Length: 120
Length: 107
Image 1 (cartoon, each protein chain N blue to C red):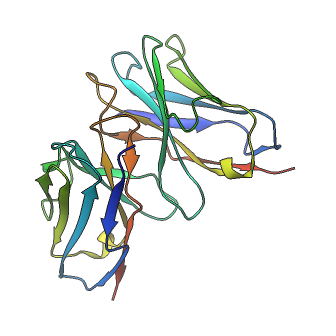
Image 2 (image 1 turned 90 degrees about the vertical axis):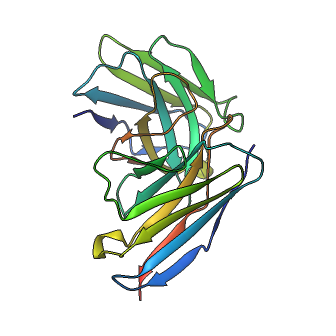
């Protein structure tokens, strides 16, 4: 059974960088697209972007200038960096797996989510 | 971006009822649509993909239909564990987008 687990600081200061890691267990990170999705408190879901196991990426244009997603296949992990954060970036951040063939796909495995609060 | 609009935003129903939730895309997306269930404090769970395919281990009381711009999620014979928020998601073009959610509550 594939499991995903997010880790990283729960509190980030405004203008600083949000950094999260997702560790994949129970399966290989190879051959799939690995995504970050966020959900502000009480609101809906926003797709941030994905990284393929090869390292190729695609980002949501609304965040593209601030986001970097990378993969470390040796550790079965992928990571999110979001620079210059503001209070609007406060959200539960989820990592999720999509399909094997196309980056545009459905999300069949999700992490439990981690709340990141942006505040001084 | 493709806008996904769900209706209603809120629905109240009783155990055993049949409920239908609608999702409309701002442009045609073929059958590239999924439905998710989210309970408070939990990650979304994939229920339906490709508009009408039931994800493994999801009860058969959940069903999906539609293509193009109009889609529905139907729950037949509501169970207590079905009270949650439901989201649709399009996978036709980047960026991936979700509906705003439909909250299903117990009457």
